[in-house]
Image (tube, rainbow, N blue to C red):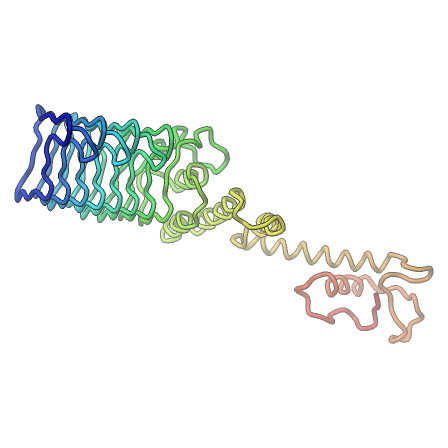
Length: 368
């Protein structure tokens, strides 16, 4: 089916009660923004594209936004969909599908996303299986699932995704019961630390993404992706990961995730002004941003010791001839300039140098 000035198949609002199948010998070549095949707002029981070739050099290969498929939508057996422009090679924006499966499929777009499926709704699982290749060229991403709702498992573990100019996958504000994913889809080195990465240009969008289970990827690998393979700082992915680890009983892992969140906040310059950033740094060094109780207690002990040492120093420093910076007064009946005891000096330091100490805890007979 060939049309040099429009869609090869124009079937908006088509209603097929059972199945619509495209067999391996099917070829559709169209032109324009309306797609080589147009199935906008169609209602189909089951849609299957089997080894077909869909081509459009000035628009999407398959334009199926707002389509409703009661059963499954499958592409496999060597399907090739080649499109052009921001609509994607295949567009499923606003679609509602019972189950989505793509394998042995090639999606190509040299000037836009390979798959655009914003606010897609899938009642069951959505997966991209073996030998799926998605090649896009768009800042938004090669695969765009922004705002999608997956009722079952979202499986992106086997896809080969490339995009020289932007995100590989955009999962912003998407939801899924579980995510099956491998770190090497984004980070070829599959690192599990939060230090610098030589592949940081490979990016994923996960702001607002919600799932209850991560499969195929460790929490450390996912944390690495959040820290090194996202474009902007966002708190929600860290909070989500911490919640997953806490629900599994791994409180230590959850604390490390939240500490990394604060480090990311600081590193991307969103911790505030220069003074705020300095306080934020000290807070992280001394107390682990409040997530490390032992370090917090140690920081308090160190502060107490420093304050006490300040008092000891004052008790030995001669401020004027015959007088020390801290000494007894005539209120105790002692001659002026009588040195304080080490205990009194230490207490004075805590009283004057540590805001947490109760006012007036130093002996009343000591002056400074």
